[in-house]
Image (cartoon, rainbow, N blue to C red):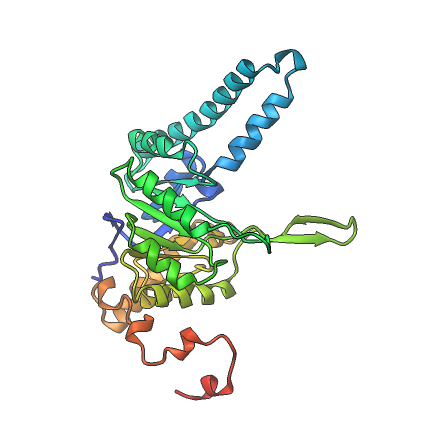
Length: 327
């Protein structure tokens, strides 16, 4: 019998499928069902600093001008923020009571702010690890802001407050991504998650307005994830978790061959059902039996860039007929 267990961030997982941060992981009942269907770990739905700021602003706007003096505003801001954070800590506690698999908290940072102390509270609530969901989209052509430096500051500040493992989830919208992956992996993080699924905007041509586009990843996005998993696995000094485009067992096998220690799955569960978790694990087991692999380590990273003499497939962006025909 094959062994599909894996070690990620110092956590022993029964298999390599982690359910990524999403609405699927926003309640202890849903988390319990995911565990029953085969999930090895869950990342709770992210708590967003931006969302807290918006919620506080909305609450303040509902009060009359008679309550607008500084002390009242400060109290309301504190109360609203604490209410949101307390609810998140309650989710951690209830999830830990509901399942035996690791429960990973997720925090979306815009700045240092209070997140260092909040991370300590997350640890106290029983989370097994924290995933920093840090993503900046550089849209200002005149900005010279060093976003990489800010990310490093956040990692250092949070890691100084906690003892549980810390993961960093990033976007591929970044200049000199390989360099940043290398820098981040040398800090006090246990894993890098590649990549964050970005919000897709669309345009409603009837009403001529910007709307939210298709919210889920598609199978074609796996290619970019595999490219950077295979590249990062060659030099990153931490575990690699592949995310975005992981829709079935075949994608799971490919990710491990590229060098992933585990994968995050979300969109495929929404599009199909929770049954896709076990279906993917069955595919992995059958494939390993066919290939005579006894455990994941037997083939993990077999096709990462540093092990592969056909690196042109990972390095080239432009298509050439040569790459199609040569074996």
